[in-house]
Amino acid sequence: MPIQPRPYLNQIAQLIFVLMGATAILYFSQCILVPILFSLVLALLLLPLCRKIESIGSPKALAATIGILLLITVFAVIFFVLYWQLSQLIQDSGQMRDKIDALIKQVQQNIDQKFGLPPREQKKIIEQSNGNVMSSVSGVFGGLFGILVDIILVLVYIFLLLVFRSHLLTGLLKAVPDTQRENVRKISREAAGVSQQYLLGLAMMIGCLWVMYGIGFSLIGVKYAIFFAVLCGTLELIPFIGNLTGTILTVGISLVQGASLGQVGGIVGIYAVVQFTQSYMLEPMIVGRQVNLNPLTTILCIVVFEAIWGVPGMVLAVPLTGMFKIACDHFEQLKPYGFLLGEVPKTKKAK
Image (cartoon, rainbow, N blue to C red; front, side, top):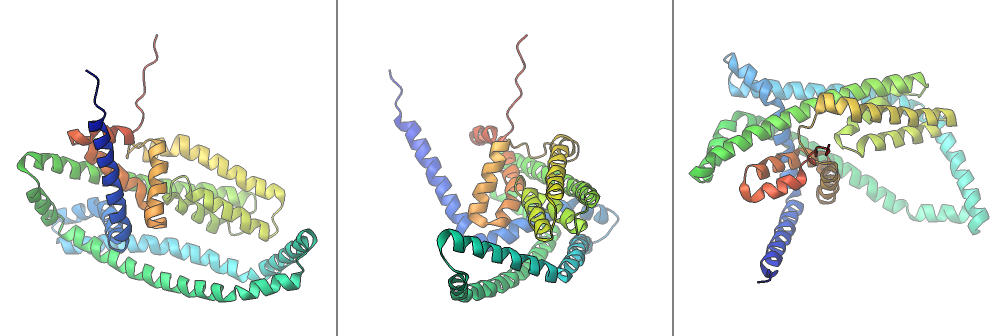
């Protein structure tokens, strides 16, 4: 008797419907979910420290406060280093402006020669777009205010998640059937452990990248080597894309500052060496395969989360997908999806 395709088509249609519904929910609830999920990831990072502080008799509220203050201190140090180097970069902005003006004049001359559009007409077009530029600037300031509000919300959420974590877990267990409670406990433990290991390993790897980029950029004479090293290393928070973006910025600003082609080639060479070291030494040794996602899944989840939530989605994509895979591995109906998200199993070669 031939296999009826209708049940399989129904399952595919249900899956597509669920994915579309989940995407719509994630998109329209961005302002609510993104701060909460950032708080959850950072709270899991601080959880081991809070437990150690609580083990000596400290109240949960005090342990959470100490953890948050330590987190703020780390980010403040990074911000201070970037601000210190950026202030020196701004001091040289006069020379950079002259070079940019000369480059603009050269571009205008090329446009005039190839398209017959004189510089005066080009200037009128630019002046007509000034209103859009001013609206963009006001939009940037509004965005900065929104980021500040989100940062305060994240700190409050972290504190509450750390203080009331036992109550929240108990409530979650009461919401599931008795047969699934042990499963939920395992998922929560494994998700927390994987997130902590991934984030701590990522922090250590970013520190190593700072050192390697700093030494490399300093050796070839890149101006503000520390600033660019911290920038390229910190952007590793966005896998595959972050440090490449930092390197492109380093090359672009170095060219504006008058860097030679040899120096630009040195920057690209340092990027290649650091990427090789990171991929084949740092990640296996420090970060390891904590989230157990294959490269295709990693890239796809970054692209999808970026389309839904923008840059915050790119940062959250890997840890959230890793947690989702752990949940899939513990439920029989979801195990095929966990298999698809996971690493490709190594097959033994036939003798």
